[in-house]
Amino acid sequence: MQQTWVMRMVKEAGSPLATSPHSSRSWGTVVTIAVVATVLRGLGCEPAGNPGDDGSEATAGFDASVQLEAVATQLVLPAYNDFLESARALESATGTWESAPETDRAEAKDAARDAWREAMLDWQRAELFQIGPAGSSITVVGGEDLRDEIYSWPTVNPCRLDQELVESVWDESGFFSNELVNVYGLDAIEYLLFREDSENTCPPQIPINSDGSWDALGDDGLESKRAAYASAASTHVVAVAEQLIAAWDPTQGDFSGQLAGAGEDGSVYLDTSQGMNAIFNALFYVELIVKDRKLARPLGLRDCST
Image (cartoon, rainbow, N blue to C red; front, side, top):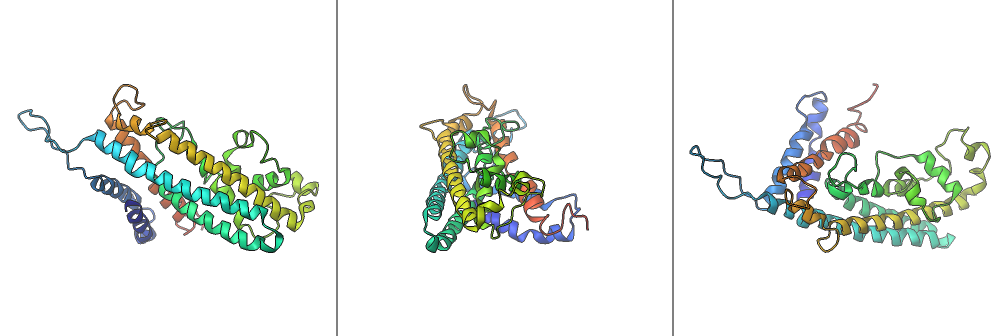
């Protein structure tokens, strides 16, 4: 499995970074190139031929359209479908946590945490596919920002989440369309599920502290609201995952066809090179986010004052 290989590479790639954090040749770039090679090799492509000196056509073997279709149908859609399954399990688990009697609430919360871990693992495998609808509407061809609707990290705001707990309006119509992505999604659900204490992350002058509304929740009230909020956010994640799959499904939005038909009439991609570049650019998530932010900062190797 390509994803398993990538995760192993990331785990084993710490030494070069640690020994030479300022090296101009980042190991993340090497990982990215290796991922591209592995994906293409796994899809069965042969090296493209080169035009002969006499001007003859290139040797047959590489068909970009076939490769683009394979990426869509054999990598992207299966990853999204796997995530949808685990997202539905998370929705069920957080719903159980919300409705559990006080005597069973701790056990239900543990089960919801396990479900979150499974959903997050499946989503992390899909993080490399920020192409088309999952990608940024500003920087990605065909982007609809659906990735951020599911997982907006590093765009997070714990204080705002605490304020939302007090306001308790997540069940109102339009909440998820009107609020910023930093108050819902897998990252917000993580905060709601794994926060152990009854403190909030806001400064004293924020109204929930200055007017006493946070303290008024009480421990039991806070736990109930965290569960209800997590349940609502999980339901939204499922809805967005279904929307994402529908966008790629050949029988619905058919972005798979858009990618496979790069350069053809009706495709958002001007040519096959633009389609291949979209895939290659998305793989830099390993370099810019996994290596530089998820690994290097916690390890004290980047953006540290000491």
